[in-house]
Length: 123
Image (cartoon, rainbow, N blue to C red; front, side, top):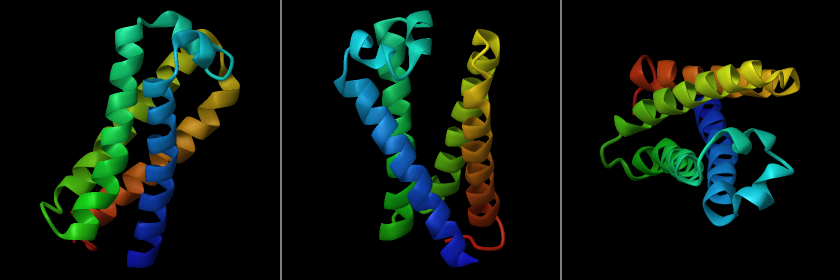
């Protein structure tokens, strides 16, 4: 089970790290083609979302890998789950139903990590 949790953590960290870096490094116009929801948010909000995604990705791996403050890993997983729940709400509001399954899968992976790392497979 520990291996499955690590795989989930790595998948989540890759997804959120790359998505967050894109939001931090690209302009709204560059992001609009792949993520049209950016038109609903200010540049500052988009950068905040990107920052939270990158911090979540780091939190999913670094504390667990180093053993320094390992309780931050399940906290990061909960944070990522909250981000996905909010993202699903945005997609529902915008009628972008094709994105909701991605949000649900990432949300479930994050909840799996939170459950495992807070509970029976704590670090």
